[in-house]
Image 1 (cartoon, helix red, strand yellow):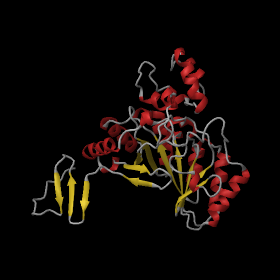
Image 2 (cartoon, one colour):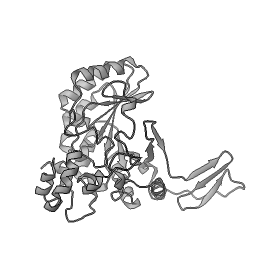
Image 3 (cartoon, one colour):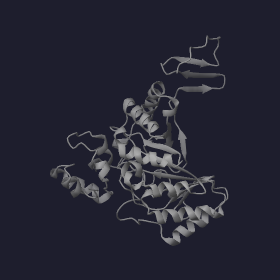
Length: 354
């Protein structure tokens, strides 16, 4: 069953009754929701289960650090009309709804989604959002997000694509979603056909944080989209106790690639309220990226990104393997050896490796 409350968590045997009072306080503050496919992956006997850590409420969520904010990446300050975030010149977010199939405990929009908030843009707000996109000819790409746009009915989603089809300067539509992982049954032949038939080029970015999330059903959902010609990208958040481990991250990226999902972004966790227990340091993140560089092919490498607090956009923070200034760079190879670039003396070429 889908879990939508602390009581559901107790009935499903995922948390003991003794935790009800503490978790009710969290559930009153932030949305609780775990889809049946993801709930089935949780091992209630493992106190450190990486799936449970992502979705089961934790009293630490009520501890707010001084640097944490309700809108850590500045959506509101870059929203010219309701539903639109225009942070970069050539692309906008279109936040169609504020409902998800599962509620992540580390979500940077946790103050805006779930019960107690508007579920969808009103018809009038949607009209204003499309009018904004139509009026701004610099917009090349529209990113459908929320909430999760793939839980919309086919009728509503089809209407969105029909309206975008009438805006000539928009060439790309990107969908950010957890549906292939959280509710794979929603990825139907009809949905794949709708995306395939769009006059725009459609990309789908799939969010998963642990290899166990890419179940047989999730891989089949991704295959349905890939078989329809939809390019798939991955999004992952680097999270303490979930994937802050080179072996886990490597396995996740390999599973993405096997599912025809190109690793895209590995996000440094945002400064959302009540999420400090998930955050790793940038130094730890860079060390993990360095470890991936030596054990994964280029196909499997995500880009490690920081969303600058306040709405100033994303910046790659990388693995620190190439640093310095013009004429005096230092490159660190995957074995940890440091090399000057350009080299001061000629070096014999290394044997090629495959």
